[in-house]
Length: 69
Image (tube, rainbow, N blue to C red; front, top):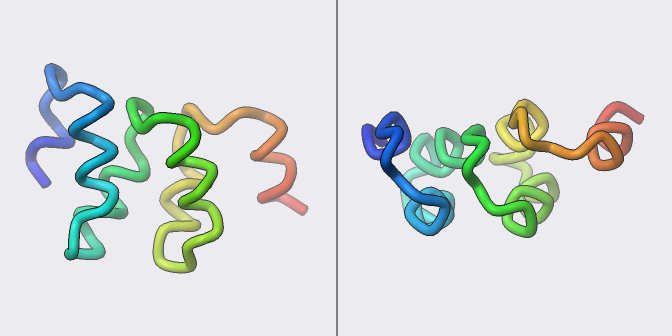
């Protein structure tokens, strides 16, 4: 999970962490703005990741509106 705090971690690592077996690691990765958009949108539909994905600052306004409705 510390890898998510590393400013040098790239989007590919953050995406890999979003598939980690540990839910708290997946949630931390899903909150990260470096998570690629397709995975971020996919995470919105995963119950244990939806809150983290909804809090991601990179979430586009269109998807944000869907979350808010």
